Length: 137
Length: 204
Image (tube, rainbow over the protein chains, first blue to last red):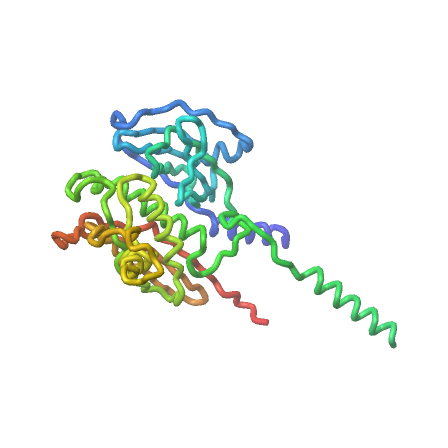
């Protein structure tokens, strides 16, 4: 009996802390102004790949700077805290110094889609890399 | 008795040693960094990134309305409306300025304004009559650039308290004024940074 009560209490506490899932409805996406690019993924964590799944990458250079928008989705059953980093490279593949470079933190609810946007401030930027990692509060 | 004292002292020392932690270098963006109820380093960098991107993406610098690029800008007042008496505004502004300069679209005057002033431009002009210097090397007057755009900043704070929980929410409001017309040509906000602390109900 005691075990049952303890288990119920733990379950209730966990439910209270959990982020509720989200449902999303949107019209079919319009033809993007940016260029959709193929992406190469190097996955070390299958859990993270599932919980912060990069579904689409759009790149736009029309304003004279490289801009990237990634659509990520949480396909897991729980909220995910993650941090991410965009790095920029010139046409020769050399990493560019960006004064504002740093990890950014986000939380994504189960079922939620998020758009992560980044712009290179340097007009020399020709390539980019996105890194994502779990974040502990 | 002496043996007991010795054992106790040794135990205390061992306990103190095991709890103490000397300084160690950490990645300021990592989970090891201290999370305070204020705004922490990685969050200031995040603000700088967001505001720079929003300013550059908005296109006002590319409109041609403010002359040729790079357009000269000046940092106006930075108003701290938070509970933090020593808000490190330079951590944000330095990154914004550096990124704007790197973009080739804008540059900031260092002769006047409210951030990173270098008095040497003015002082160099004062060397005309100083026999110590070769006056022919002193730049002619009237060359200092006048800023066409001014960047004004407010650091905002909202405090909330309910029961044993406290929340601080911070954000940056920034706007750019065309000093010719006196109208804002861009206005933006950072994403909010919210911190919550719940005091334990069990007292010591």
